[in-house]
Image 1 (cartoon, rainbow, N blue to C red):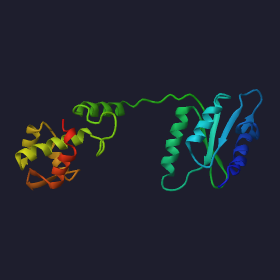
Image 2: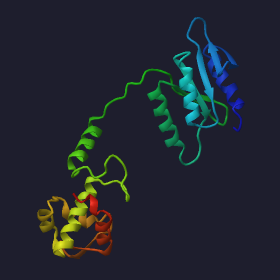
Image 3: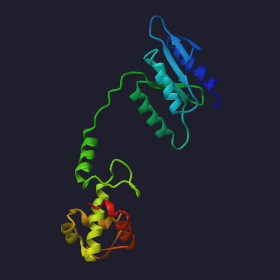
Length: 221
């Protein structure tokens, strides 16, 4: 589909099957539908998801609570994620979402309504664990020059700092000296390429590790 008016007929058919009288381009709205004394339904049409589409739909909420956005069903590699993310946004904004398939069939993914997000205790616990593990406030609310400092990176930096000062060491010694209980696991996994195994259970610092210490020197504490 390369024109917005190609969305109109599938949307109109969908609403008419539900007993609505449908008209296009009514005032500022792309589509308006009425059914008896029920509140009107407004649908905003666009060829793709965009910020302006959401702005238009939100503006229509001053007229009625029953506002939908309608777009061609996304295709391509990112289609599933694009649909999922925009569906979530519609729900948060109290908007409905309709997509139109290439064969002309209109599908309703959600109806307008108040958003009541379900809280995830698992995600909350994960967030708080990361908060407690972080040493200080290394990110200051935004990305650093080399990226975000995570608790895992701080542990890796502590291990690297110990090896830089003491040379090749056993994982258990690094764990105690750097106060990183999972030091052996971190060095063995070597996610950043900072460590190399000298012999069983003994690790040393690589050139990449020394560069990492230079790059991240400000975030070690």
